[in-house]
Amino acid sequence: MTPSLHSFPGGLAFVDIETTGGPAQRESITEVGIVQVDEDGVREWSTLVRPESRIPETIQRLTGIDDDMVADAPRFADIADEVFDRLDGRLFVAHNARFDHGHLRAAFRRAGLDMRPQVLCTVKLSRRLFPDHRRHGLDHLIERHGLVVADRHRALGDAQLLWQFWQKIHERFPPGHIEAMVRELVGHPSLPPHLDPEQVAELPDTPGVYLFYGERDGGTEGGTDSSALPLYIGKSTRLRSRVLSHFAADHTSDRELSL
Image (cartoon, rainbow, N blue to C red; front, side, top):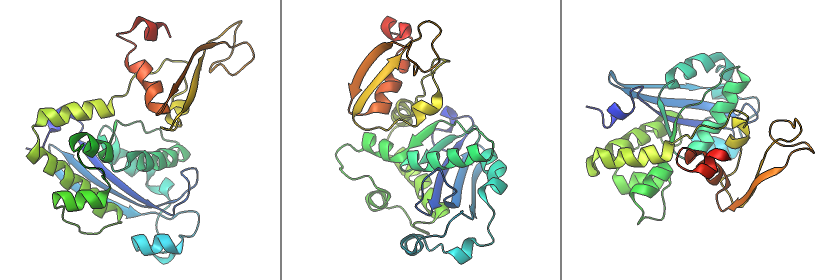
């Protein structure tokens, strides 16, 4: 039986993308690779994608993907529905998942689709499971766990490595231990209805100060007009995680619920 699948009835999607190195706001994806795992087995899928700009030589040397290879590839909008269907309802598993999820979510938005999966970052999972190790990049996981490399720095090849890593940790740890870590890492607290989820998604997980605004005299949502008053001012070394923690605790803390 596939490890821990009973905790994720929709199945798992191990995902990797390659890009031109450009920002998520532009069409910079050059390849998508997905390993789907569910009760029906394991299925692999990948496609090249034609970006809107040329691929820098440094990226070509790293991935082996050049402009000629993507010249006749589909635009992301042409494959958006198929990619969405392969991810929909599944736990989205990626290495440095914020990068892959951010690029794909932006690409889906341009195609008129809204993807909001539960997201698991294998860097964070590795840190939780192996706190004695300082480095958790994919190359370090390959060496540490004896992962078999088929096509490094290609989307499907790297997605396959994540599936191997998932199997390896289930050989080493009890399923309940991994499930507890995953639940903690993928927990998505429900946001108040007037708080824009896009604002929260775009918050950096870096040090800073954050403010929650309320409404006064019919103030606008988000508290950006002159009538809005601060409800709460906080600071954190990890802004996004700290902001989300307020809403994760809103069922157990009177103060958070009131906020």
